[in-house]
Structures are given as C-alpha cells and as structure tokens.
Image 1 (spheres, one colour):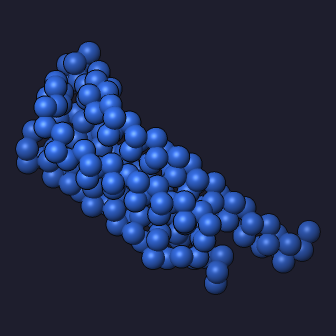
Image 2 (cartoon, helix red, strand yellow; image 1 turned 120 degrees about the vertical axis):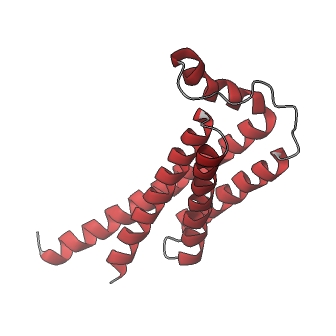
Length: 150
C-alpha cells in the first residue's frame, strides 16, 4: 500500500468517525431534549440515585415545581440537535463546530461554577463532566478534521 492510499484511507476514516459521532450526538440531543422537557422529574430521579444510595454529595431538590426554564433547555437541546446534524453533513463547517464546542464549554463551566459556589450537588458535577467530555471530544474531532485538510 502506498503512502497516498494510506493517507486517503486515514482521511476517509476520520471523516466517517466525525460524521458518525455527529449523528450519535444528534440523536442524543434530540432524545435528551424530549426527556428534559417532558419528563423533568425523571432527570432528577436519575441524577439523585447515586447521592441518595451512596450518601455522597447532595441530591438535587426532590420535586421541581418551577418549570419556567424548561422551554429554554428544550430549545438549546434542539439547537444542538440541528448543529450536530448539519455538522454531520459538512465536517468542514468550522462555525458549526465552534458553536457546538462553545455551547458545551459554557454549560460545563456553568455547572462547575454552581457546584463550587452554590452547593456540592452531585447533578452539577455530572452535568459538568458530561458537557466537558462532549466539548473535549468535539474539539478533538475538529483537530482531526483540520489535520486532514492540510
């Protein structure tokens, strides 16, 4: 196998990984948006299992009676759904990739801020870690895509 064929194969596998990852994130954001909006107490139940069972950190408040922020959360999840979907169609669109990275970075920093300065709530830590891992992964994919363009 020549160097050219190896390089071409690496380029194709990088693009495939990027597109597959964006499609998986598209579905995750879409389903997450539906879940957050229509079953908000389910989120609390899932996130409160470990802190209550293992008695670590603090659980989220049991019953959320203020649903004011749900439309905003739902709209953000559907915007991310759209951004990830469009990114899967065009891996060279840096604007979409940057919006994706920036959104996940801001939310992870927000959760970290709440965890440190509000209460040591387990759900804040989980939100920070999940969003930061997505941010780092999309940033990693961006770097890989940029390398194959050079």
